[in-house]
Amino acid sequence: MRALPAQGQGFDVLVIGGGINGMAIARECARHGKRVLLVEQNDFASGVTSRSTRIIHGGLRYLELGEISLVRESLRERELLLRQSPHLVRAQQFLLVMPGESRSFLRSSLAIRTGLWLYHRWAGGQRSAAADVTTLEKQLDAGKRWSIYSYEDAQCEFPERLVAEWLVEAVDSGAVVRNHTRVLAVTKSNGRATGARLRDEISRQEYEIAATSIINATGPWADLVAGASGIKTARMIGGVRGSHLVLPRFKGAPQNPVYTEAVDGRPIFVIPWNQQIMVGTTEVSDSAAPDTTAPTSDEITYLFNSFTGIFPHSGLTAADVRYAFAGVRPLPYAPDKKYSSVTRRHILHDHKDDGAAGMISIIGGKLTTATSLARDVARKLGINVPDPVNVFAAPVPDDGVESSVRQWSRAVASKARIREDCAQGIAEWHGRHALAVAHAASLDEHLREPICAHSCHLVAEAVEAVAHECAITLGDILLRRVPVALGPCWSADCSREAAEKIGVAVGWDRERIHQELDRFEEERTAFLHPKYVPHVAEAGAASPCAQQAATLKTGSE
Image (tube, rainbow, N blue to C red; front, side, top):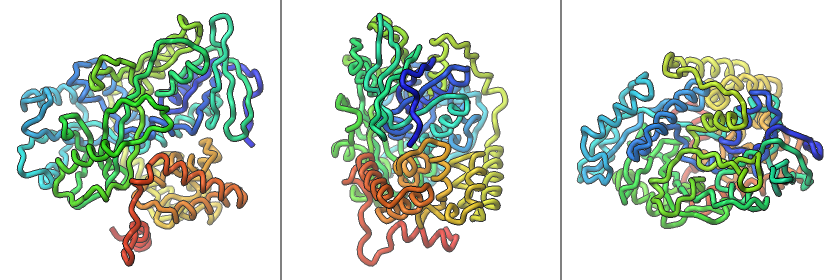
């Protein structure tokens, strides 16, 4: 049983919501000496963060809309993340692919090249590398005229891992963090927010805490938190659903992320992700409970048709869609504006005039600018937070990043006595902390075992997640701390094997193992949606898992 904050215990700052924004705020405030409590109703990064397109970018689209200051802020924050978390945030050469009949304002080659030059200069003009245009051209519809341009942005394949690392840093700085803890209501007295009534969803125990300042960083749940607390305010969030689909890699699949236009001229991305291809995203009004959001069949058709319009020779059909997922963007409520023109800036809404002084709700925000938002919130609370040093002055060379990962990989392989190619995957997910994973694996042969037969990731990673990253459930582990269950060949057999190995390693009894397995399958299905889960292989055909397991055993490609 985990310890709970004492009834009535006081904190300087209560942060509600454990996505990337809430975690960044908690970490920033704790680093500056504030006593912080962060609570999340489900698991950290289980909401909007895990349902994003997983890119860290300045935003060419914002440039098109004239939000110059937002583009420059985003580029600065992109560079900060590349320096601070180079194993998780990696620079990538993106390809802008424009059809001849493009509906974008970027109609001429000169306009596009000028925009990309500005984008590159505002980012410091540090790196330049060629992208694989030739392979891409072979896949494009030869019946259309295409213009292809290369530019740099970054990708964070697993923002869940970034949140986990910030969680550890927040705790090391003195923050108290509690996932699976619901805010029943913000408490108020004499026109001021004074704390919150909480319920631990594991033990079902309810208790109250006091807080001087309360930050509502719940994203699309922000209005619900205010409403449940009796705080009357104008609607803050205009929920916009963004859906993605995930496809298998195909012969000639792009090696670089592609930014292009959908069938209706909207911008979409086609991105290599987690040994698969991700396509997204849509923009659809969604005012339902964020917990229940799901991609519609129309959205899946729209995304798949847009994909095949760009890659008609992929050989994929709608039956090849592995899964689809959706999240609700917490954009500002702006009923009279087109979704594309609603600002992506974060807004701090002070509830002083709503009878809840001391409470601030976050509207908007995105992966790229989470740390910028955290600094703004800290300053709002009276903390003297300096601006970041000039991140463009001394860039970290790409080969330096690769060298560090290779060094960590060699150390992990030697310590844990595993293959170096497997150790590299662990190093890329855990950075320097991979050495602690290796140490744990070196002490127990059971912790050195793969989580499932086709995976390089070890049971030791799951044990570390429980011990140091606040993972409680099997879903916390397999979908976020060690997200192997998002891989291309996860199956029910993998789930059973992982539950057994992890359960034994962390000390669950048989009943708990079975309960965790059932809950995990239910959560994964609700996230990825059953009609888009991978199809069962035909009789006599080797399953993807079996094929990958054979590859791992032989070490072949």
